[in-house]
Image (cartoon, rainbow, N blue to C red):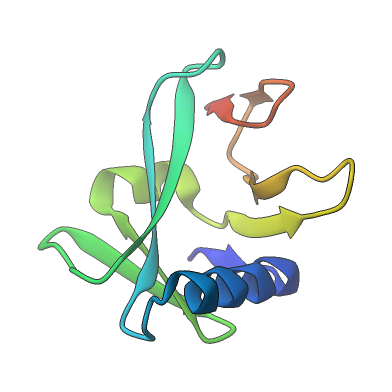
Length: 108
């Protein structure tokens, strides 16, 4: 399961409205090789499901990931932090054994 924090839900709704995405668009999250810790998160809006997609819904937001990425993201919460010292969107991943200082990459 992937979870969406209240702060992330609010920001997703704001971006969806500002960019003109409809309710058929969901958040797609994936994990790829890269970053200083070895793995990096990718997040976009999408409206096309793929055959190997895993679909999760939390707080009315659909979060979709591919089968390979779900292994790295199990029980992860998508969060948002704003303000002067905010990080923007970030992932609270209980599976990560190491993260980089900027929070953009992780290792398992």
